[in-house]
Amino acid sequence: MNNQRRATLKAGGGLGMLGLLAAAGLIKPELAEAAWNKGAFDAKTLDAAMSAMGAGKPMESADVQISAPDIAENGAVVPVGVVSNLPNTEQISIMIEKNPNMLAASFDIPAGTLPDVQTRVKMGQTSDVYAVVKADGKFYMAKKEIKVTLGGCGG
Amino acid sequence: MANPMRIRAAAKEGVTEVRVLMSHVMETGQRKDSSGALIPAHFITELTAKHNDKVVLSAQFGASVSTNPYLAFKFNGGAKGDKVTVSWVDNKGDSRSDEVQVS
Amino acid sequence: MRNALKLVAVAVAAVVVAGTATAQSTADDIAKYREMIADGNPAELYEMQGEELWRTLRGPKKATLEKCDLGMGPGVVKGASARMPRYFKDTGMVQDLESRLLTCMETLQGIDPKLVIDGKFNSGERKTMDALVAYVVTHSKGDAIKVDMSNPKMKELYALGERAFYYRAGPMDFSCATCHGEDDKRIRLQDLPNLTTHKGAAAGWGSWPAYRVSNSQFWTMQHRLNDCFRQQRTAEPIYASEVTIALSVYMAAKANGGEVMTPGLKR
Image (cartoon, rainbow over all chains, first blue to last red; front, side, top):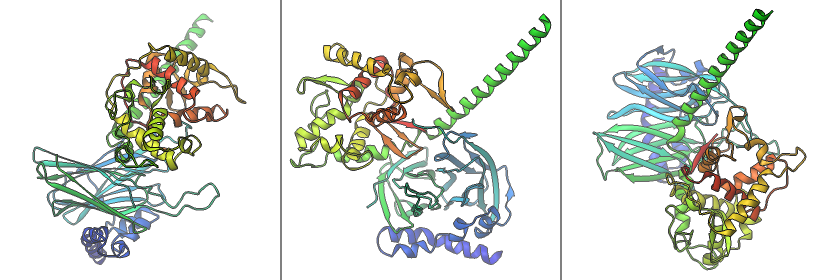
């Protein structure tokens, strides 16, 4: 567990710089790619994804809030925002339980950045959406069910 | 060559809010084309945002992020005229970097 | 007997009320969803490309579109699409935004309109058109729809548009009015605007062109109309043809005074 956590931390720390260097054309993108948490993004179960993130079994916390609609008219674009009121929040991740790959995005929050991010995700079907927050080295989570209405045709 | 991002950064009461729209297909690798062949995955994997030279957000994306990704976040500080730069890399090695001045 | 009937009536009324309440709360939730995605419309990405294209030297004449007259004078984009379709003296025709842009591309840049008219959606010069349209319509956002119907040619096209709107055709015997001619029609959860009324036309006409999240594409009004014909299972209309412009005149005239909400964001 501890080793895993350290490995994840190390990977997380190297990310931004490598990504930037790659973007600037200074290094080959494959190198930056190596820092991307493949294990977590390729995980097919919630437990496997959590474990690859070093999150284990995070405890549910009221200090983690998900802002998302109860119903999404279209699963292709589902707005999800996460706010953490936990001190020293370092990382926020968004997971969709019923997607083939459940980890959608993971944000590293350096000091000075507010633990408040919003993005949009795809959802194949109605599912619980998890916000996993790492604060002070510990993992917490919140979940919310989002219903997806599929189908419809034309415009 | 990837298309430019639209970045908006606005400072208000000591906090700068950044909103980014990226132009990217974010192909999951699960869809099939009209001939039944699997369309290969193609999506942004990493993103870095900087305020002047300081990293204010780094993110990893999976294929579940929507096409033409949207991202909004806030950081402390930032003043009118400061530089905000956002860069991304995708799984095929394509990349894009754009900058904007804080308004 | 009478009492039993009354009971049934009450029960039915209760079910209807409950059903309506559910539908109402679903509609509210969907409205909330739409509000949450309204900020950061990916149409902005097309608008940026369009703005760039407007100022790019293109075509055999290596010219920009900066002298294009959309009806407000050469190069004036602000408020232009809120007043279109309109009659243009120089061409002697009523033109919608796309057909007018074709005129500008041809006269200023030397680009053959056939590249767009005979093209395919989402590729080549039609893609260029998407971006240009996104750019222009963004600059009428918030304006009032203000189509000048005083010109006799506009009246002529309105009449043609009205006929086309009610014209039934194809294997299903559909017309535009089949789906858009009555209040409170829906396809699944989507409310269909009644385009024969001011309110419906303002909602429909006022919010297209739009970015569609279901296919991640920006659709011009020409593209939107083309898809209506597809859903009628009738022949595809020719891009920028008179009947497509006539349908736009019909909708825009009904929508007059409503708010321009373009570029819209659709499911």
